[in-house]
Structure formats: C-alpha cells, structure tokens
Amino acid sequence: MGCDFFYDGSVPDVETQGKIIEFVRSHFPNVDLCIHPDPDTKYRTRFGPAFDDSKALYPFDFYGVIPFVSTGILEHGQFIFDRSAGGCLVRILKLPDSFDVPPSEVISGTEDGEVVIMEGGYNRELGGDGFALLLNIVKLRWWPELEMGDDYNICTTVGNMIWQYGLARKMTNEHIDFETCMDLLVREHERRHPHISATSGQSKPHLRIIDPAAMHRQIGDLELSVRTHNCLAAMHIDTIGELLHYSEKDLLAFKNFGRKNLAELEDLLRDFGFYLKNE
Image: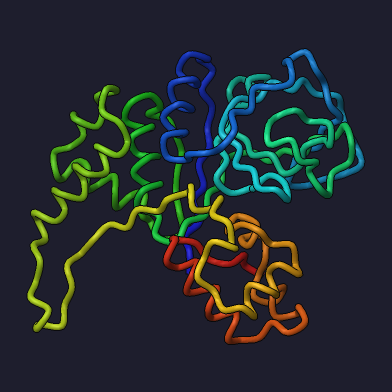
C-alpha cells in the first residue's frame, strides 16, 4: 500500500519558482527540466478534470520537474509551475509528439499538438517520509502558503517533528541540502526513540527514504527468475519506471504470467520503495 501526496497553490515570483524547482530536483535525480519550447509557442490545451471538446490555444510556459520513462511522462512525481497562470502548480497528463524535451523518444498515446494539464501536483510513494520532508522544507524556506496533504497525514507528522525536534531554523537555511536535512531529522528521531532490544519483539522507529533514481534501473540488471524476465521482455517493459504503469490485473492478464511472478515483482518493487499501479 502506498501513499498519495497532493500539493497545490501558486508562486508568482519567477525567481522563487527557480529556487523551489532546483531544490525539488535534488530529490528527483535523472529527471528533465521542462523549459522548452519557447513560451511564445502555443498548443491546443485541455484542462482537467472535466475534459470536453473545447481546446483553446494556450502558451506553453511551464517550468518544473517532469519524470520521463521510455513509454512517456509519469503523472506522479511532477512539480510544475504554470507561469502563464501566475505560477500555479499543475501536472501534465499529455504532451504533443513533437515536444522537444529529452529523452527524444516519441511519447506514445498523444495527439500531435495537444497538451492536457491538471491543477495541482501529485506524487506517489511507498514510505513517503522523504517527500513529506521535501514539501515541508519548501514551505519553510520559500512558500508558507503551500497547500499539501497525503493519505496518511505524513506531511503533518513530519512537519510536527521538525518543530518538536527544534530543527525548523536549521532547515530554513538555504545552504543546507536535502540529504543533510533528512540526516538531521533521522538522527534526532533515533536519539529520541532509541533502539529497543530485539528480544522485546519491538523494533526501532525509523524513517524510510525512497530513491526516485530507481525508476531508471533496467529490468535486465535485476535478480528475477527467467520466466519473469521473459514475460516482462515480451511486454516490452525495460525499466522499473515502465513497470509502474501496470496494475496487478494488467500483469496477470498476460500469457504465462502468474501469481508467483506477481509476488516476485511486488517484492522487488517494495525493496526500491515502489508499488504497482492501482486498479
């Protein structure tokens, strides 16, 4: 079971947007910065959630983090400001085939010349403490009006820990990077919740850090059974990121893919901090 994060609001100041995006990128290695094409370029654009047939020409002036896999863009894990709308947070569901942000693979399932966007941001993680910390730091340093939340109130819990542990002042310092902030929180958490002997049947409270770079790991490099490897190859699933597009039902519908293979993949994803797509 994973955790869905939702974050929303607007930052009109372009300089502040840049600081936020550069900080967010430190949590999302190997993703692309959406800075092309020129803002004067306009695409037919649809706005969610109530899509209809009306498509207006809209200036492409978005700035932010967009995770890519070979099958296209990932909806979850985006952090994008729509500068044409006064710096509102959005996420992009579809880009035109001609869009020129690396990687250069054609984005499947799109109509040339059309962009589809949704309001607000959305991220999905298994543990989520790392992303909750990231949102709280953004709120502390640059964006006090940031609206954020999640399925399990992790954002609130981590935010309370920052204040209770006396770390707010340190984390407000822009010279301290994300990894250092996480280390400060983890060490203080462990100091206040010392290890309890394993004989008691209890374990030490801990924070789990998710590594988004794992999305780009090649399936062929992972320790899986031959049958599972062959099934994924036949489905043209080459990376962990591509696997995240599939649900249990999708995989089980494939020929020769059974419950044993499913359990093997779920164990693998759990090790990296991910889980399969919800139905």
